[in-house]
Length: 140
Image 1 (spheres, rainbow, N blue to C red):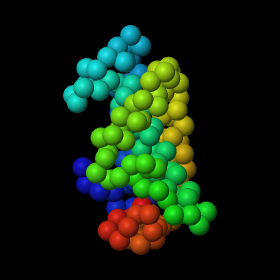
Image 2: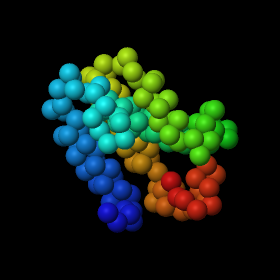
Image 3: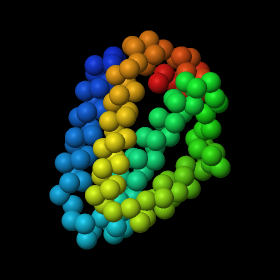
């Protein structure tokens, strides 16, 4: 999939991929969502928890910089070479969350990401160096 070149394309891709994932998630029986049947020995609930976790990190990094703070990256107590451990942390955080609540939280995070994109200009989204937390190689 080519990288979106502007805000409209970015929104279109995010909407499309979200809808595609939700269409896959919605019909899954609650009795199956905790079974480790997905490649990598994870469950459907784990996949949703992972999406929530990374969405919240993205939103948190942006909010921290907006408030003049240095974002902790990738997350407090985790380094970039520990992303597997971070994923497990996301899974464990939502172990007792009902599947319906997971989906609702996923929807909320998705909506907040959409709102973030919508409030940014093309320059803010695509210019390297606009946000310190993105580093010197990546735009938002």
